[in-house]
Structure formats: C-alpha cells, structure tokens
Amino acid sequence: MAGFSSTLAGRGQARRSAVNGSVPPGEAADVVAVLELPPMLRVGSPLVIGNRMFWLQRKRCRAFLKDSLWVVPVTSMLAALICAPLTRRLNYTLPFSFLDFGMQGARAAVGMIAASMLTFVVFFFSVLLVTVQIASGNLSPRIIARPFQSTVLKAALGLFVFTFTYGVAVLGRLEDQVLQLPVFLTVLLSVASIGTFLFVVEFVGKELRPATVVARVAQRGLQVIRSVYPLPLGAGAIPQPSAGLHKESVCQLVRHEGSPGVVVAFDMERLFSLALKNQCTIELVPQVGDYVPPGGPLFRIRGGGRLIHARELGHAITLGRERTMEQDPAFAFRIIVDIADKALSPAINDPTTGVLAIDQIQCLLQEVGERDLSTGTVTDDRGQVRVVYRTPNWQDFVLLAVSEIRQYGTNSVQIMRRLRAMLESLIAVLPPARAPFLQQQLDLLQVAVEKAFVDPRDRRNATHADSQGLGGASSYVDRDVEVSFPNTPAHLRGA
Image 1 (cartoon, rainbow, N blue to C red):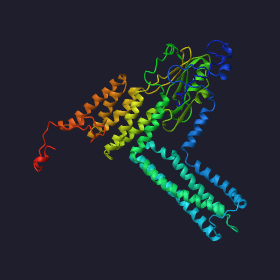
Image 2: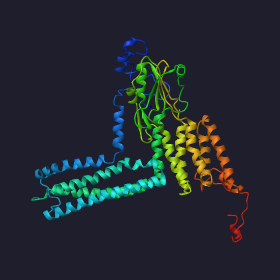
Image 3: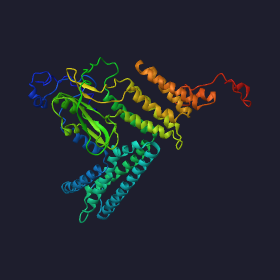
Image 4: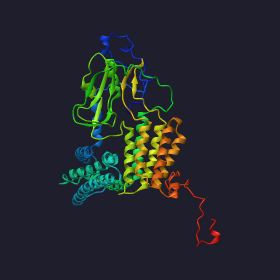
C-alpha cells in the first residue's frame, strides 16, 4: 500500500490486453505475464503494476536489515580487517611521518585506543538497554523497536567496532617497524569515536523525551497516511464498482498455513495481477494490523475459471510478530494513545505528557480528515471489481484517537480542556462531512465531565477549551465571581 500513491498516467497503452477481448481466452494467461498494463485502477488509490515476483523476499530482507542490530557491527569488523592490510601497503608506498611515533609510543597509543573502544562498545549496549527499559516502562512497549532501528545508533556502534578491530589489527603488526599511516588513522578514528560517543549520549537523552517520541511517531504516521490515502477529500468523482461483487458466490477460500502473526503488509499490485489474469475477484479477509491464527481465512476468491494456488497468494502478503506503520496508519494513533494512556495512569499521573500526545493526535486526525479514505476496492477498466480489502474509516480513527484518552483522563481538568480544544478545532477546519462524529465525541466529553466533577466551578473550568490544557491564552476566567483579598492594598485590587 505504500506504493498506492504512484500513478500509471503517461506510461502509454499496452500492446494487447486480455481484458478488452483482443486476445483469445486461452492465451490470456500468457499475455498478461508480459503485458505493461494500462491505467485501469479506478476505485481506491492508483497503483503501478510491475514485476512482483520477489516482493515478499525483498520485504523480508529489508525488515531484517532494518531490525537487526548486529549487521552493521559485523560489516564494520570485516571492513576493518580489509582496510588494515591496505593501509599497511599504502604506508610502504607513500612516506608518511605526520606524528612520527616511536615503536614504544605507537604500541602504547594503539593498545590504549583498542581497549578504550571495547569499553565504548560495552557502554553503548548498557545505554541501549537503559533506553529500552525507560521507553517500555514510561512510554509504551510499542516503541521498543525504535532504538534498534535508529540509523544514528547503528552508525555509532559500527564506528566503535571498526576502530577497535582496526586498532587490534594494527597493533598486531607493530613488530620491527612503526607503521606511521595506520597508527595515525587509529588515532584519528579514536578522536572521531570520542566525538561520536558524546553525540550519542546527547542524542539518546533528547530522543527519550516524550515530546520527541510522540513527534517522531506522528511524523512517520503522516507519511503513511499520505501514502495510503493520496487523494484529498472531494478530489473528484470516483467510479463505483460493478454490482456483481456480492452476487458472485465464494468459489475458493484460502486459509493461513504456518505460524500465527499480524498482517504487516500486502502487495496490492500482485493481487491485482492475479485477479486480472484469472478473471476473478480477490478479497483480502484480514485488515492490515489484524492477527491471523493458523487456519484463519486469508483470501476469498469469487469467479474465475480455475483455482489459484495458495502459494501464489501467499507471496502477496507478509505476517510479522507485531504491527508496523508501513501500511498501517492506525498504528501511529495506537502508539501515541498508548503513551497518553500510560501517562494518565495512577502510577505515573503525568497529564502534561497526555497533552503532548493530544497535540500530535490532532495533527494526525486533521490529515486523515482531509483525505479521501479508500473504499477498499480496486477495479479494472470495465469497472469490474478485482481486489477488495478493508481499511479504517473516519469513525475508526476518531474512536481510536479519543475514546481511551477521554476514559482515562476523565478526572483531569487539563485533559478534558485539551480534548475539547482539539475537537472544536477539527470541527472548524475539516470539511462539514467530518463534523457529525466529532460533535458526537464532544457530547460524550461533556457527559464525562458532568459525571466526574461535582462542584459547578470545577465543572465549568473543565468544559472550557484550552489548547494548552491549562494556562493557555484562551484559559477560562470566571469574571462573574468577585474574589476578595483582604491583605491586598486597595490600589492593587483592580489590577
């Protein structure tokens, strides 16, 4: 779905098409395999059809490289072992005496650098473990994977391991002659490692702040929303799929074989190619983010002249142990709401972090509200439905974003005021079609306030919108109540 925003416009028409009847039915399967398809995806997001044979393998490889922390250090070790003999040969070829080390000084310097780099590596993993503990304990377990995916941390670890390995390789060759160039490079690498170490300490400290975490998640969520829903609301008339979808009976049900998992992504382009090739409709049963047990239904096939092998369909979907934001815009909401829920728990009781979470939720909801949420159907050039899939609608996003925070933050004046400010702002800026459900959430918020606050003055404060929760420029001031300060001078009482 990340490629849904691409378009086929400008690619030209295909030479032959099995869909428009110019090819005999018996040759359709052979023709579609080599065909450059015309732009025919009309409902939902536009797609590009290409070679999808290795989509699943590429996706698994990218996920492995992204989530694995050991790949960069191992690569750095191999690179250091290759660079060490190359720099020795270069030292023999080019006279180099910048630092002019003696044998004893060179061995002492390189040995100390190698030992310090090993200490850096150990300390790095200690910092990483502390980061994971803080992130899971104070924020959300859903962000534990972020430190292991950080490019900055991987690069820093790779530099430390490279410097250590290179220093050991140079130290082993300091026997009869001082290798000035390798020793100089070792010293240079140690200086770079010290600077990188200080940067990593500062980087981790900043990245663990709740405001930074929710902002990073929201930024990634905005990218996914724009990718999955590329069309703005009301961008144009969308052709409706043919009514034959619900009239056709299910002729094939494909179940999941293997270990259970969560639907992480699916290859819409491959599903469309298979449906077009077999002249059928393929329905993806689970939604991205759904848990699929062994034997659970994956696909329903309607129509078509032959059964599609389960392996062909299996290559168009990938399952994982946990949700990701690759094709799941609702997961960004889930992470930020989890952070807000934990901040509002009695054990932590940090409503200000909840307000920070609502700030980012407002950005996400506004982006979703301005988008044409996919209908979940893809048709060919004749309007025949070829692929059906489920996506969250506007009500799903709003319920996910508001319900739990309202429930757990009912007793917090700060949260009630910030939620009201968010809902009122969204009603004001979003198209009118989005307003009714937002107004319903406002009504529920009012009911929650009336139940939680007994004192009319607290209730009145809690029902006022404040973009900061408390202390904003729009803060409520009860000017009908005259407050007396006996010890205040008379000339200051009216100030």
